[in-house]
Image (cartoon, rainbow, N blue to C red):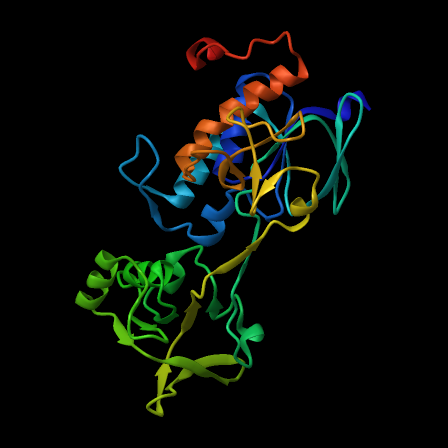
Length: 328
């Protein structure tokens, strides 16, 4: 049993969880990372891997997936145990450790760091007949590789930042880009909307999708309508990208015996929750004055790890040596 008990188990493989994994390795902690997604990276990999991020210290800008790749590379020397496509259902406090029950097995850990972001994400799907048959073929809810749309006719639906940003980025690689939005005004940042109107992107507002037109199991076009003016248009395409946003849910976490404030876990500035030995970092945690940024999660990760190690062994110093000393 003892060899199966980890020092720290991190729930969530997004930026905060990955950096916590790195720092846990620096402190010599036997560490496990559990994530419900099929790959590490959290929201960055799932929602906008190709988008640029501007609020990470030391980077004027960095592509989301590039940041994730660097974080993964950073933890590789420590050979942490990583469990993907696994959801933690519940935990139970034993005398000297916790048991974590997932939808696959039971894990054992002396401390827990919850870095689950905003919970699990599901895209708001297109409610048009035939959409399920086309998913991941020609109908997409997020983009993993822009090159897949090279020299293709692409239609994007949505009016927020994601839709407008993707339209602007795909303009450089696609043969043509059309954006369809149900309102005349876009909700994206003014600067992006101005760039949209100055671009070669075809703008169709206010329109909604009425049908996906298929032949030989392939989508050849879509029909859009303006209900108020009874206008109907057909747009030929190779790919349809739907950016109606994502719905998030804390899932089983919401039922855990922790103190919550709204959809966030209430934590101390030490990152410890209402249950000793369980810590919360990143977007899932809150405390007075908390600012929810990636940079904040990065700062909270070492705090959580150091406090977790101190919880496991109170004789361990809370303030560790600097990284240069730990590596030497």
